[in-house]
Amino acid sequence: MMRSSEPGTIYEAMGGAEAVRRLVEAFYPKVQQNELLAPLFPEDIEPVMEKQYMFLSQFFGGPSLYSDAFGHPMMRARHMPFPITPERANAWLGCMREALEQEVEDPELRKVILERLKGPAYHFVNQP
Ligand code: HEM
Image 1 (tube, rainbow, N blue to C red):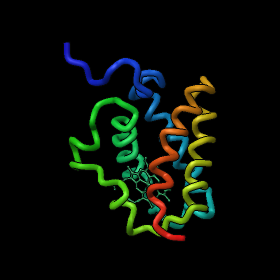
Image 2 (cartoon, helix red, strand yellow):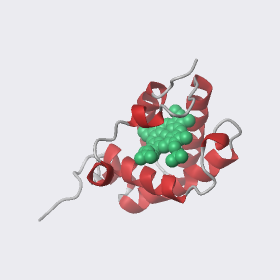
Image 3 (cartoon, rainbow, N blue to C red):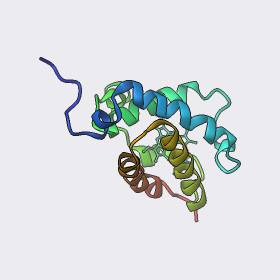
Image 4 (cartoon, rainbow, N blue to C red):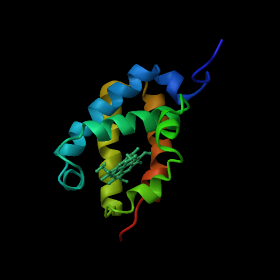
């Protein structure tokens, strides 16, 4: 039998594709309401949501949807066109914390997920 993801991953613990989809759908409306983040994003947020769904699926240990479609993620490089300050990284993580509180029941799992995202978020900071 083919597996599209391994047991013991964040992806599996969350509840797979549908759970990642719900998280992304809870997250971007918060980004669009955030005064530090909103100006960076296009009005049509759907394509960004789709890419984030594909990326987080693989980042959480599920199927490699993003790399299959777009090649190596190079996420820091892809964020270079946007001025990302430490305050914006914190705002991004704050929106994610709220989305997790809404969509993921288990507080331990929420903590694990947020910790996994902190590394990349601060790594993408490219402005003082
Ligand atoms: C640190 C704060 C962050 C800011 C301010 C930020 C902002 C942005 C912006 C402005 C875009 C481009 C939207 C467009 O297409 O016009 C983007 C794309 C994206 N971001 Fe972030 N981001 C942050 C952190 C993260 C993190 C932590 C992740 C995942 C671990 C992430 C994953 C993505 C993905 C997958 C895309 C789509 C890339 C593509 O175009 O293929 N971002 N982000």
